[in-house]
Length: 98
Image (cartoon, rainbow, N blue to C red; front, side, top):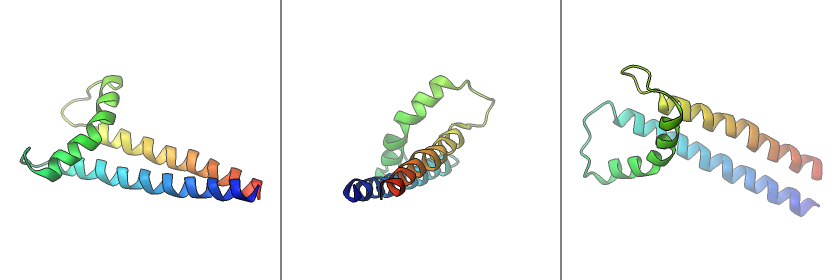
């Protein structure tokens, strides 16, 4: 059972890193939207391509609230929730399997 526990620890660690990196990508996208970025820039295209699928789904579910775009904040809150719930649950299960 210790192999399964180690596998769950590894999955939890990788998932935590991936979610943290994606959160920073969403933050960078929000910061870049404050200026007038060049849409042909490779970094700007990467940020838009990496975040737009998730932001599009949230945009369809959440109504527009005035002139300020709160979608990145909603996505960041969702990422933190998944980190606390899913990663924490995986670690707890792994600890109990040892």
